Image (cartoon, rainbow, N blue to C red; front, top):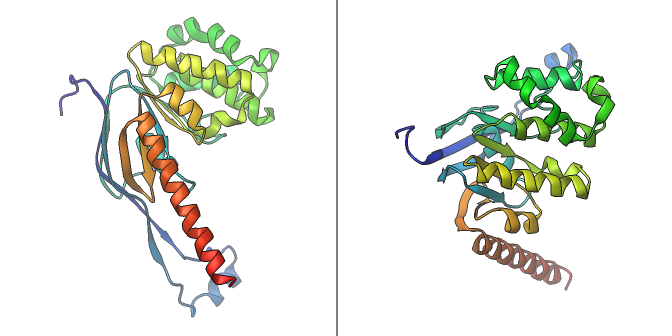
Length: 262
């Protein structure tokens, strides 16, 4: 696929397998006593042949129940973890806001981490300087900018992390549920910024359990169910299909429970 096309993210038959059931041996005695034990290991497929294309300037949501594979997908796209099979091609500079604690060096202060992240994105010091005051102002952490981030609260961390990710002009912005840590006013501020990012022709991919946010912000939505692509298309249709599935599952669980207590 040509990088000159209108495609921003191209995912083909993407799968990710983890091995579960193994026992972590932390001490020598545990290792020695474990020599004669057999541990059953099983394959767990967090993603199973997922495929989709996202165009430049689109804001796309990702929904699904806990453990469905949403965060795993973002980690693969962010190149934090490698896929077991398939391909994920991203065309442009990527900034990601995933788990709290990812992307910042805890011993560095906020200002130093801004420069660190900017340099990792390939920006010059001059380019970072031009955005520095905007980043600090948007984050709202004030004088704490020169405090080591290991002393930040989770809310302060997320405020600065989002501000850095959004203002360093990435062409692709990947965001996980971490925005739920911030207060309501800051969440609304972030939503406005994401709309601004998308209107400038950049791409936003957002994982959230807040379906109202997904509906208001995203024109298209991906529904991941047990690692597979259950739906990709119009956001309202995606949400309707997802909620119908959840209600159906709950009804089956209720019926099974009532049957067992008779």
